[in-house]
Image 1: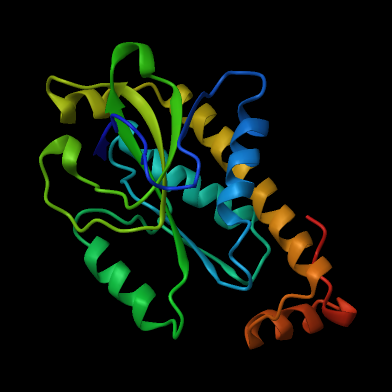
Image 2: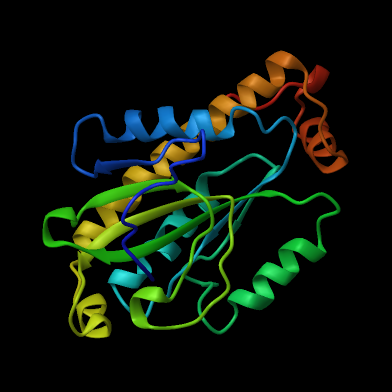
Length: 224
């Protein structure tokens, strides 16, 4: 769990945005901005690392997102770390990052997902910003920063007894926020897959083998 960021990057060309989870256009807005983030990736692999634990309702935001993504993602070039069954948290974050970099000859593009605490009128906001996630800051833990792009959900109010606040966060809000994030990510991944198919971007062997096994001829990808 991180502190709520104050401002987005002022030097990056990538978007830094906030949307309220119950806005009618929340999914559409997040998808549009994610498209800008992923547009120039070429055939680079994507890794989504969802930080948190199922032992706290507020801090379960990341693992819930990871669980829903893993159930629905169908693209071999997308990897998900951090689920309710296999969470990524303070104890195993460093080893998880080591595993990711050890098993890839080319560094993947990493999207970091986490919960955060913030101002009262910011609760329910979903924040996307370029640059690494600095997890643990909200509860005074020193953990490795990581990621190319960060996506966080403001699940409750900061400033006093953070552990207690996280543990007593309403699960309903966390679930609804995670629904918005997952829908936007899946939609953006689908659009990226279609762009890669259209331009004939080269793919790694595992992607090609998976397509052939599923009966998608000529380098095509599943539609959704």
